[in-house]
Length: 322
Image (cartoon, rainbow, N blue to C red):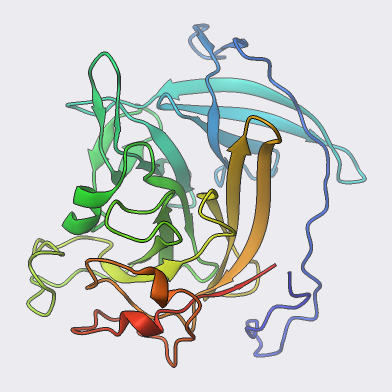
């Protein structure tokens, strides 16, 4: 990763801070572990964990929220030593998320407000073998009740129609300045070359227009959204085997995020890699029905964060560094 941020701080000076990742410890929860909610006393088995965020409502900075892929939101206390090492994690309460008309293959997690009362959860299109269908969506849930409130993000119809089963919105985050939310399909769309993922930028707080006459009706809905799509950008992972599984805000920049990619093989197990993603020079491909192999690696001459009527897919580019 680059050792310095490139964006000025509040005072306009370049932040003289090195950016690096340091392993601080881990805690293993065995499969089948059960924990009781401290309020109700009810126990629940901990399923596979999909996302983790610091709880913004906790002023001590020692409480985190976990999201399991069975649609359950967990809150836990973390113990950190004076040396900054992770010593322990203790789940304290859980709340099952509920959505009418289907189950939730919950993957990405972010908070909408600083009081921690509402969470945003991204989900995948995923059909259960015995019935039930999870929708590709980014939805808002009330933390206290676990109830679904609404889907405030503009997910293009083209993406819904071409995303592969269990390959949808695995990660979700906001940029450091709060101007954008970021998500991406974990694996290539059925119509795209296997080397491509599509990173979606949503407006963070800008109200959606009452209509969208400039966007082609085959791709975008004309209904207003609280968080309309700002751009759809081409993302090339380490190889076609890697899925894009998580995002986190960059500490210094509103045009960068941290991205986690994962591949798995029976021989080597999990291969997990962390990257810094700079989308300031990426070409918007939101109007492109398909992305082809020949588009890979071509440098983009400019950043187009508005919907382009006829983008040049041969110039689709992506800045991506370790």
